[in-house]
Length: 135
Image (cartoon, rainbow, N blue to C red; front, top):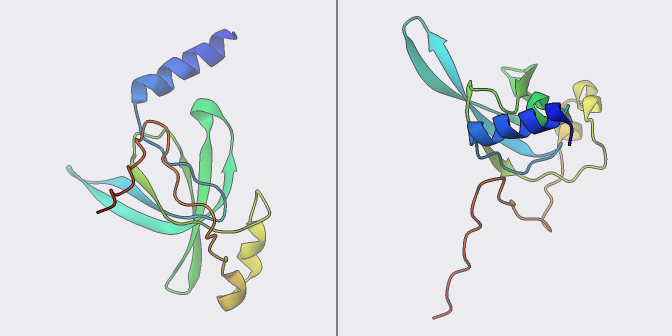
């Protein structure tokens, strides 16, 4: 095994973050720690994941949302200490890995169809919920 790969795996294990399994097209809610002066607070950033790039410790993802009629994109490192949590709000049905074409779309043409066949899968380190017992 490569020494760098081994160090990255050890660092990811040390961080012990639960990252859900999400892909481009999914609507995600990213809770980000924001420092304002002396205090810190958690701010939710909800939007469509339009890209994932990199791998291992250097992996990042781009989230796009429309704020007051203006498109806003933000790139988050997956293993950043500034990210409090990531939650998948809904799964999208897309056939591309990079959804940069959404930048040119407005209104209904920018919508992504919800995927119904795949439920929200638990991420790394999360336990799968048991099915309710039949009464």
